[in-house]
Each structure stands twice: as C-alpha cells, then as structure tokens.
Length: 249
Ligand code: PGA
Image (tube, rainbow, N blue to C red; front, side, top):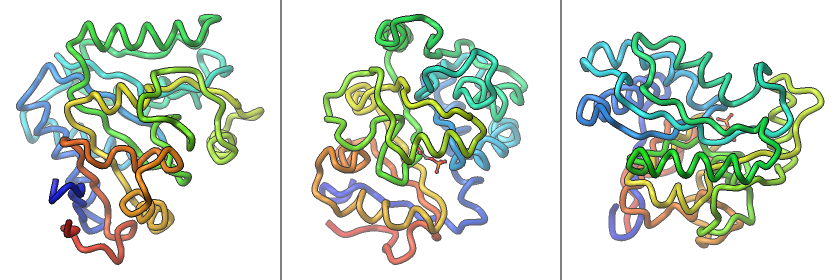
C-alpha cells in the first residue's frame, strides 16, 4: 500500500508470468500449508505453465496446501472440459509432481447451489481461512463471478452471469453456454490475508484504469479490493501502459 493506494507492480510482458509463478512458489516455500483460491480463464495459463518449474527451483510444492477453485459454472455436466474444476485440474493440478492435499470445489451437481457455496465456505474455514486469493480481472471488472453490482459484503453464492461472461464460456467451448454460476463472494475474498490481482494484455488496459481510478463502488467489483492491506496488482506492461510502477497517493 502507498498512501491508501494499492501498489501496482508492472513487469515486462515476456517475464510477467515467470515473476508470478516465482511469487507463488515463494509463498508455498514459506508456508507449505497455504490455503489458496485459484482462478481459471486465460490470464493465469502462462503462470500455471511455469509453476512446476518454479516450484522445483524453490524446493516447494502444493503437497500440504489447500487449493480452492474460485468459481464454477452451473449446468455443465461433471466431465465437461469448460468446468472450472476440470480446467484447473488440466492446466495446473494434473501437472504438479505433488497434487494439493485438498482440492475444494463447488458441488454444482447438488440441486441447491447455495448449499454448495456453504460447503466451500465451511471447507475454507476448516482449513484455517484463505491465506491468498489469486484473481483474474474480468473485462467488465468482475472478480471470480462477482459481476458488476456485487456488494463488498456479498457472500459466496449462486449468480446470474453477465453477457460477457456467458460469451467467454461459449468461446471456451460450452454451447449452450451456462447463464449461471457459483462464486466465492466478495466478503470471503476480502477476508483473505492476501489478494493478488493478475492483469495481462492490452485488452485489459481500460478496465485496469477503471479498477485503479473509478470510485470504489459495486459498478467495478475489482475496485472494491482497493484498500485491502494485502492487495497486490501484478500487471504486465501491456495492461499497465501509461501507469507509473508506483502510483502516488
Ligand atoms: P481472462 O478472464 O483471464 O480469461 O481474461 C478473467 C476473468 O474474466 O475473470
């Protein structure tokens, strides 16, 4: 934090993912029992690619850690490749030498999605609470599936997805695309000890600008993270073009 403003870390696009992977590996080396919520989407993919090597270099592993999937679509069958739990397994967990001790997912096959959310919250609490939440930044400012309009005290819950989120699911191969999902709420995200917001690519420059500069309201849920003492915004220089690396208060 710098005078109430979050610290924006900017890395060259070609080393950004290495930097984030190294930072995750360092956290696991320091705290092998880490309880961490992880996102899906395009943003973390290069980070997850580099993570096995970063873990090896740091002498760290997920073997004692708890991994929580950040959110999930409702209505996709259990083996659907676009399901967030499947994506996280395929892009990261299955590639780890030691899988996490616990993988907490939303049981969206259970008829009551709010019960599935409560079960995730209970599992997080039983593990000691979230040490770290890693987030992508939605083009509309959402974090997880906390779409615009989400209040800072929004619990984990079932939500209607914004049109751009539905369209993203379609692009990833869900057709028909789901229109609802479940997500860690803004409240449990804000209760985490650390929040790392990952931002990469020129197409995120506008929403990064709004995340840092707009009034702190539910119109841009990512802006609600500002003021969290453990917030890091880790951007590449394409998303952060025009920003000084250390915004002044
Ligand atoms: P992206 O999505 O990483 O695919 O850009 C981020 C998000 O919508 O949360």
